Length: 190
Image (cartoon, rainbow, N blue to C red):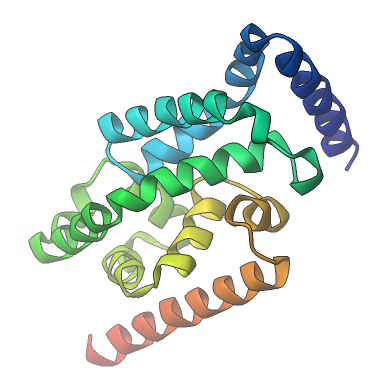
């Protein structure tokens, strides 16, 4: 909690500085680009993720006067921008997961999907989890991937998506149930 308070104070100082002098926005970029980059590249392919991360800061810079510290910190605001920018890539993301399942290439994938799935469950569950990701609705997938890939807290996810903390928890719970149903179904059929 002390680190969060320190970040909020530092964020408030950053906001005050870049409102006085737009060149000071570089400090926001320096502090948060690695997190946004890691999240974007983890959700998309490297090139698209790099583009989304860079575009996130272009949008944030253009909208810097609209940032409202009363609604949350800079980090969730930036993740919100990145998530909205990724919305146009959702079809590609879903097609990617389906292609991995269809081709059976899941075991050899070296992308971030492989690392996320491995950290969530044993490697033998990877095909089922990838398939389950395709079954999640947009809101559930955003919550799961913001937590798993972006490593945001429930509160930060709520700020990022502009939803209540309880909504984050219910979407995560529904996603877990869908994952479990897929795993159970595979166990029965397997």
